[in-house]
Image 1: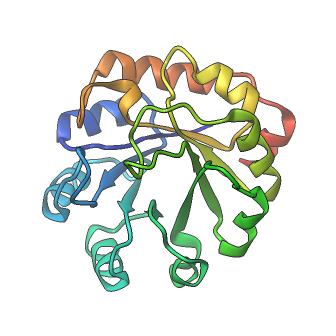
Image 2 (image 1 turned 60 degrees about the vertical axis):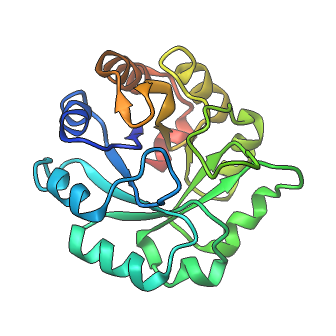
Length: 212
């Protein structure tokens, strides 16, 4: 199970996530986010992390040149688009792109195909924020989205519900930010450890295992 700890803002949280077995950590470069950090701060964290942990930059409606420059300078493994980016925009980043789909009214899982990304992230819809809200995603709809490609499930996940979420949505991976925090941008290390352990021990269907 691919497990991403998102909204990392400091080295202690990043190293703890790596120690407890996180597959990836996410850095938010959207200035309106409570978990924003500068590329310079992110780089100071990234250079201390083991190569086994994937580094993901989160962007919202950002200038593509800024995204490309940041990804190159920080040696990001993936760039995650959490805004209103078009399929044409996303395709310019190739296999490095992760597109986020928020499950609002009228969401059609088939639209994932138009973006052509190797990974899609399924999150809950909130009209006031682009993510990190703690609102639980519709797991049944997320499961249907998985028919159109590998999905990472986000939205309201916690150590208490992550195994139920995995069983219901059958994702390739899971993503958490607020569900393992003591305050926005500050992780509760005990919760991070428990979340990762429970996600890795969750029983998934053979089809999801084959995707990995």
